[in-house]
Length: 245
Image (tube, rainbow, N blue to C red):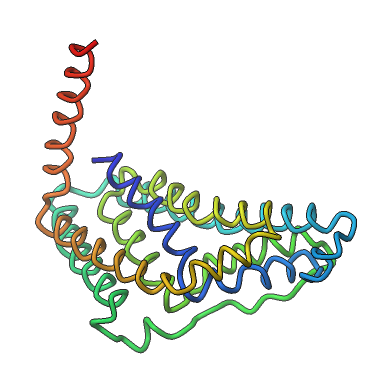
């Protein structure tokens, strides 16, 4: 079951990056953090690519630290609660995950959850410290098309506190790796974004459906049963491969 939830958390991070209110803004955001412009990249100004990549690294570290701390907090606080409480937490958590999935699909509209809530931060004299702070603010803030995905992952972590830290770390990796790739290959990022643009909403709807299914599994306490079915299937496949050799 752990492998399934970690894979879902990583996928959720990737979906958050691909959301319509994040991915199209990446080039402008990275150049802003690096204190440069897209024209500087085109003109191959010395050191500009390095500054953009390092800015993306510190930005990812910023939200990675915050998400990891949330995971540690959930794991330390909720792991010791009684089994009966965890069962009821699964009911509530499953319903909340379904709710976030329906919001992502567009079936439900809740004004508070679809409003933007961000911390107001200012640039400092230290470029990479600024990137780190903006990354932390990104983690703490709430944007309409990222919030539902993040809310689903946080709820999943709360319903499975024993793996809350790995879940949040997996989410951070799913969200962070594309940021690092965008920073490393900045000149190609704009073209990729334009190519993916028409599919971003479809991707979000798809993951909304995944969240609804996940919520149903959590609510009915069926996630572990599916994992138990998948593991023997994997073992059987490995055994057949060995016999085939």
